[in-house]
Image 1 (cartoon, rainbow, N blue to C red):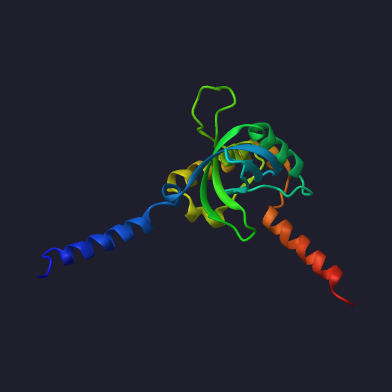
Image 2 (image 1 turned 90 degrees about the horizontal axis):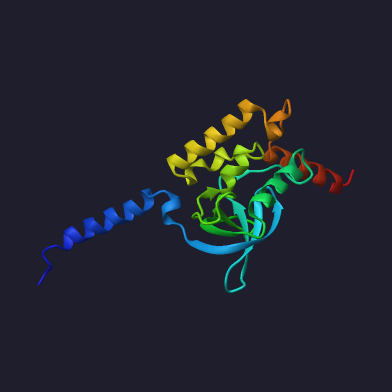
Length: 190
């Protein structure tokens, strides 16, 4: 005997699958509570969880200046001041090509030790003018998050704070391209 709702079940399954695809990445992510051990750059940290497992994390949604680039040290210091030694909530979005977890990192606001972890570390970097909003990956963010990030960068530019003090700040993705070309040029026999 055929189950009378089998067609309905297939339609429901298709709708659920479609719903999962349309759900913003932030709503589909894994989360972990950890302590920040190291801040390597203005967008890369190392955390350890309660089982002593270490994770290398790349902050989602931003690209901070490289360490040897203008404002690279300032960007790293700002993130270290916000996160180093503190408990954070890591909301995994994906893994990158370097084996790092790309995640939204949330911390308690510095002035409220009894508050929930509501301070977005990447957004804090944008507000301080020490990172670019990584527009290329905006589709991995909710529309609300895109709005916050876009406005934070716009506001920092308008106030000319952080790297926006420079007359022509050089984006890190362009800097990396230039540096890798220089490296390969040195390796090429003449």
